[in-house]
Image (cartoon, rainbow, N blue to C red; front, side, top):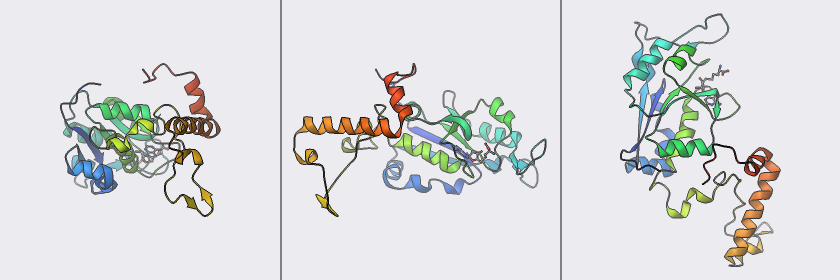
Length: 242
Ligand code: SAH
């Protein structure tokens, strides 16, 4: 891991800058933002509109429903943001590579990304090509805009930044950290509607607890996510495991 001399910074290009920080201003991410552990800049794409109507979109070439974000306006907004070389330039997009915890770890370890939020039917292909935007998806479903997707990505990164989570809440144990889903969690009361906490968890035997959690995590992963389970058996080449 390289030492981060600068504070992790997210630059978001959006038609709705007022949506930010939104949920990122609360709880874990919000406290970290307030205490300067990371910074956020939401920039209005419309500020880069050039015509007197300040239009940012137009009808799709070739016809069809909806509107498309103009390449010239979006390129102007990207250029105006003056993103330092080396910062990832992402476009939230259902056509993108599905986001994984491994990619989140990489993004959290870097200087922080530029994130372009699409709207309407999406953005003109030429700006994706001309500004080498990396398309990133948060799942196989379609949102009405990239803002909520960008917030999901930023939130997942911010909780991993040094000093954001306490040791207690450390991310080393949770879902995906070792290619497994997390084991079931319990807390007081000991009896809830006739359901007891599994005995092993109140046994005080740390080795037995660890073995039980491991077995539960493996069983859950096998049953719910055979794709993850198989990847674990045959680790992919780009694995981050040592
Ligand atoms: N017509 C496009 C969808 C546009 S949705 C298509 O079929 O691919 C409008 C915007 O919402 C997109 O430009 C993107 O920025 C965002 N968006 C929608 N679904 C998303 C997803 N699953 N992941 C990331 N961004 C998404």
